[in-house]
Each structure stands twice: as structure tokens, then as C-alpha cells.
Image (spheres, rainbow, N blue to C red):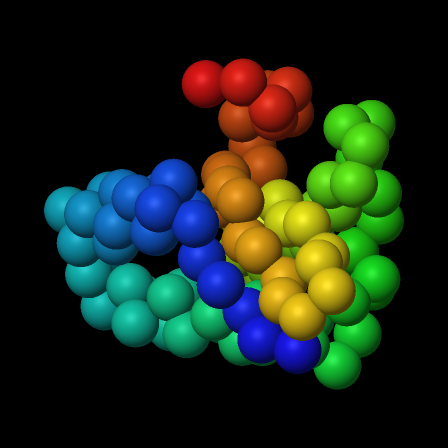
Amino acid sequence: MRVRYTPRAERDLARIVSYLDERAADVTPQVVRRIRERATQLTDFPFMGPPTNRPGIRSLTVVPYPYKLYYRVGANEIAILHIRDARRAPWKGAE
């Protein structure tokens, strides 16, 4: 199984990097590395994130940082759909 970031998830990650670079550039590499590590863990444990209320979509918290990965498990890949700051309102699947 492989991990694929959707274009939206790639944009989300770029926004996170931009935000952190402006406020706390010294932690940016650690945060990005942790986000990518958590996504990679899904290759061994694709169902470790609990299901959301949207069919087929699961979420995974990126501890110790306040981010969540929203993803879908496919036959041969895990698609990272969205990366969201968990301090914001929960993702409804739109926007």
C-alpha cells in the first residue's frame, strides 16, 4: 500500500509550512516530518484512524501537533484528502 496526497492535501501542507515559517520557522521541519510520518504509518495500519461521519473517510491526529489527516483507504493506496488544524471547526467535507 502506498500513500498519495491529493492536490488539496498538498496545498494544505504548503499553507501549514507558510504559516509556520512566518511564526515559528524553527519548528516547521519537525511538524512537516511528523505529518509525513503519521501518513506513512497508515501503510501498515490503514484503519488506525477512526471513521468520520462521512462515508469512507477516516481521520488521524498528528500528535503532538494540532493537525488532523483526513484520508480514504483504497485497494492499493491511502489517499490523504485534507490536512486540517484540529483547533478549527471540524471538517464537513466541503470547502
